[in-house]
Every structure is written in structure tokens, then in C-alpha cells.
Length: 486
Image 1 (cartoon, helix red, strand yellow):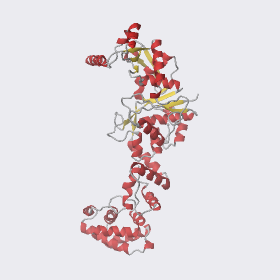
Image 2 (cartoon, one colour):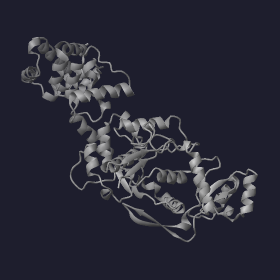
Image 3 (cartoon, one colour):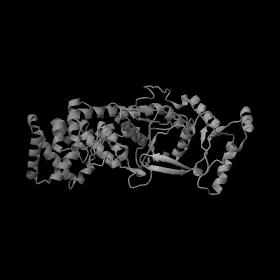
Image 4 (cartoon, one colour):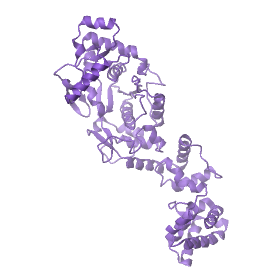
């Protein structure tokens, strides 16, 4: 069987990282069988519509290195792929449900519905539900109301006292009491369908074979099963994925802890390859010790049977940093440099390298890439290579017993470095001569070299000090030491 999966984001906000995880699984499942992934924009919620969200959704999916076989920008046999352009289709099927007796017109006003909800809340009912008032209207009353132009919605007629079965490929057979399910609105008074009608109609017409979605949609699934049954259609296979939670918490991802939107992680300096690799394990486990997966390897190894049955999967932000650091370290310096430049120009501004050329920057990157965990860290880790740092001289006492002792160290080493011939200004020679001065003046290594580090770099942590001196050169090193004595 050729598998057809779909992702149907709503432009009511930005693509969530959990949605991107679902898309990754959709992609892998479809590609395993040379199937298709369909992208559909569910833009029927006009009240919460966010301008430009569709374009940003498509862009972030592409930025993550994923693609779709049918949908916006690429077309396909079921165009259009924007639900707002398919209203006549949904209206046709909504009326069909009414004619078959599986749905009905509801003319209740907002005032009556709010009063009903308030009364049910006072009774402390577990859930508030519509009371099926308009289900008792006669055919003549309905026709009269329609003729008079009274606003209406179309509601699903949920049967009473039934157990609705849902087959989930991960969770197994689930049952839902129909008495707990509301007569869901299918068609709103403005002519737009609700999610429940549109998603079922579109998934059927687009021949979707497998629906992967977050566990939060599980309560909606019995409503969809009722709709498939009412239409006489065979439902697709359902797979409900674990929700994402913060580590050591039962709560879903929160902006208070860090980024939650897929685009924000790119802005934070994460690599798409590392993000995808990390997301692979948010609910799926290969059953091996292997952790580093290319997209191609994941497509090959992915299976629904290895999706976790747990309700939530931990979104370990420290683990994501580890993945990103691994990808950075395993990347060639040239490739990493190109990514740093592109990231900088996209999210900040064009990079200023002062008097230095690309060859210098590649050497800088070679020194710091082992410490980099995100692209965004490049500036903080390397600024002193390009520009003289601000040096707060009062901080010298953090490394030396006194300010006078710090100045003595700097002056003695400055004399040493001035007398080293340019052709002998090498990392190894600087290391050898600088250590000889420790014995000559009875300095402690930490005292001397931390003082020199701060005087030339303005920070306490750098790559090996003599690698730094060698790279910035004799003139720049001695100039900075001179400035620190002024």
C-alpha cells in the first residue's frame, strides 16, 4: 500500500516545534514506501488568523530541510490546498449529513448558548454540552427558519448510549462513551467549516492513509470516527504521538523556559540537521544505542511500532545543545563558517571582520569550534580576535595578588614579546619562552597567564593562550598589553 500522510498547520500562529516533530514522522513514514506527504493549510479559523503565518510556515519547513509532494507552491490533483478556498466542498458534505440524518440545523443564539453553559457550570458538570434543543425542531420549523434567514450552524448528531471505538496503531483499541461527546458544530454561521468537518472531508478526498498527530487531538478522534461512519467512508489509520514536556515537569513546553516555535530555534543558532536528529527521539526509540541519525537513516529505520505509548516525551534542551555541538564539531571548518555567516546575516546584520580576511576567520573558527554549541555563540567566543576588547583594570586583582603585581607581570612579558623576532612568533616558541619566564620571576602559571589573557582578550576563558597570541600576531598582542598598562 502506498502511504499518504499529511501535515495541516493552521495559520493562527507560528509552527510549533511539536508540529515539526510530527511532520518529521509524517515525512519518514511516507518516504519509506515511496508514498506522498501532503501539506494543507487549515485556515478556516478567521478570528485567530495571523497575517503572513502561511508563508512563514512554508519557509520554516523548507529551512529545516523537509519538503512535501502535494500542497502550496507545488500543486497537486486535489487543489486548492487552502481550506478557505474549499468552502463549497464542505458545505456540500455538511448538507449531505443533514439529509442523511447525521447532522442538524441549530438556530440557537449566542445568548442562549452562554446561558446554557452558565447553568451547566453551576451544576458543576464535568463538561458543558449542547442540550440538543434544535434537534427536536420539526421539518417545517427548520424550513421556516431557513426561509426567514435566521442565522444557523450545522451540528453533528451524536448518538446516545454508545461506545465509540477508535483504533490507534500505537495505543491500541480505545473506547469513548458517546454521552461524553458534544454535538459538535460542523459548519459555522459564517459559512466556514469547523476543524472537525474540514479535516475529515479533506483527508478522505486527498486519500490520506495515516494520520499522525499529537495526543491532545485524541478527544476529537471519536467525533471524526462518527463522521467517517456517517459518510460511509473508511477511516485512515490513527497514530497519536506523545506531547512534549519540559524536563522534570509534567507541563507542556513553555516560552518561560525557552523557545517553543520551530523558527525560533533556528534564530537561536541551532542547525536544522541537529534539530531534526534531536526531534527523532521525541517519542520514538530505535531500541539501540545509536543517537546520530541523518534524515536518510531515520527514514530507513523509522517505524510506528517503535513510537512510545507514554503520554508525554521530555524535551531536554540540554540534550539538544549536545546534539548541536556534535554537529558543529563534526562539520568542516569551511562549511561551518558559511553557516555562521548566513546565520549572522539573516538574524543580525552583515558581519564586520575589521581588517581581517576569511582565511583569518577560518583559523579563529578552528580554535573555538570545539567550544561552540550554537551558531549564535560565535560572536561572544571570538569578538576579541577581531577587535581590541574593553579591559576593566580593576579586575586584574582577580588573577594577581594586587594591581601592582598584575602590572609587573604585564610589563615583564611585554618586554619579552617585543624582543621576539617576527619569524619566531609561533605558538610553540611563545609557549616555551613564556614558561621560562615563570621560573625567572617565580610566577605561578595561573597568576601570570590569566593576567595576560584578560589584558589581551578581556575575558577569562579563551582557546589556548599562545594559539590566540600566534593568531592575532606580535603587533596586536604587544599593542593590547601596552594599552592595559595605560
